[in-house]
Image 1 (tube, rainbow, N blue to C red):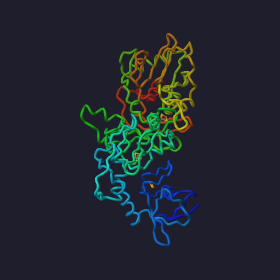
Image 2: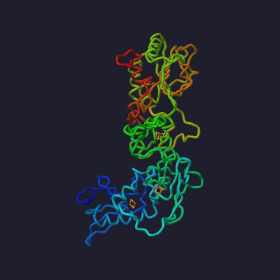
Image 3: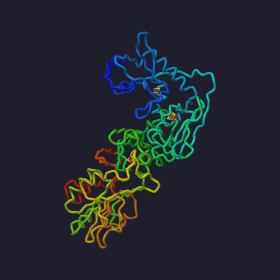
Image 4: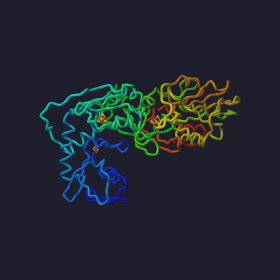
Length: 480
Ligand code: SF4
Ligand code: SF4
Ligand code: FES
């Protein structure tokens, strides 16, 4: 293993590593724009220059494309290095608009951060800035501001090397260079296209759904798991910080909304990427909610609904349950512990692929559109094609159940989070909490268990399924 010294610290590198990789692996920071650990190395931005000690003094070279060698001595912050970075920053920002006040990337923009760190001076240019297209529709999901683009080509390389759509390219040369989508529509059809928004080091690629919605410093990320398929990608759900809650009545709804979703790097599950469906979780979690228990469509309170459900469970001779593949491991275990001995229980698929959706691919997307089928199958069998004819009570938990399968005359206890017509047909209906209102775990198709955390409070009339199962079994502390 080659040993080298960076800023006076001796480190051991792996064979074939670059100075950038060795430094990053050892917690030493070198700035970068075009480099990305999962993409090829074009070496075009030149901000990652470091100094290397030599007989003739110190020479500077880019760290992202320089292999480590035995005995190398590297400086990441010498006077020579800082002077070169300052000149590079002057060059990169030559035509950059000072849009920071209205740019969605402000607060997360490395160009802004490095300007303060390595340049911090007014432009030296005496020429007028070269203007380029602003608010260019790259797809129906992404807007491009070419004036902000620093031509790092990360977005172009992403579509060539990761999503393989080849959806983006660079037109023209020098300060007339423009990122553009291929004319065959492959970028608009790329189910991973929104990853380019995250990896763009500046505010050139912008999400239409997040455009001018919030300054990022007003938002807080909560670690979660995408329930869109059995991959269970690790994500951050971004929502308003409690200390920045909006107070005007018409704005209050924004306090309990997901403003954007970004990947949370998990090498065992999704690496640093997610698909576009994961970006759209606000639509899934933002659907109209069921907020009160019902008895055959008539509103009641939780105690009344529990009493009726308990008497149905007590009277049933052959009760059957179809459990949710969107239930957490904790909820599924609670069902098993409280009611598993009483009910014949089967797992159902709550969601199927939507028309037009990519059903499965070799990157991340799985055909099973439920996050915890593996967790549920570890405890219960798969649902039979029909509910046994002699079942006299059917407990349905979650969406996606065909109520036509319930034998005539059987009672129905239904647990669902969403406002749906089926809710009113059940003998007893319980509105239950959703993933954003509780902590829990899902187990993905490969057996990896991931945690999700609560970001919002549930409404007063809404129950937690876990407590409800214990209450139905008459266990102490069961939510009564
Ligand atoms: S749009 Fe962003 S990611 Fe793409 S080349 Fe320009 S700066 Fe780089
Ligand atoms: S691949 Fe599946 S789990 Fe990952 S973001 Fe897409 S839908 Fe969600
Ligand atoms: S990060 Fe090394 S040249 Fe861009």
